Length: 153
Image (tube, rainbow, N blue to C red):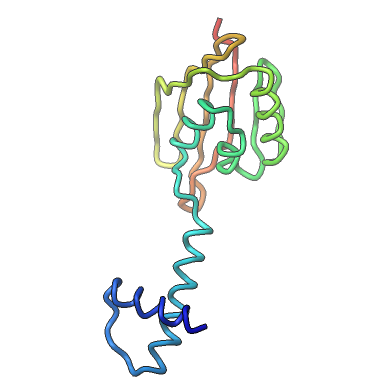
């Protein structure tokens, strides 16, 4: 407990909080340390575009799936289906196991007030694919609502 209180005093001086009576200061600063810690854990630091780029480049389905809507349309090589977030992640993992990426580049992007999209080129050991990622803005949060993977040959 003593270390937490000392840490909170150090944090308070770095963040520039004003001086309060001793008892109030210890309680107030411990709460702020916990709050700062919760923010760091809850919110991912990677934005959607970076997640898409890195996820396709490194075959990281989980990184991409963290931005999926609760239900997502996936069109994979002429087969389209509506999946839950976790099911769509598994479909993408399977695709990556069968098609190991070597390079991914976003070649075009567009945006309106509530939607945006990325079109990318994915090069794999087995061939090239065109990737289209449709994004919807819901309650000021971006979610991938449709993912299309089609052969680019």
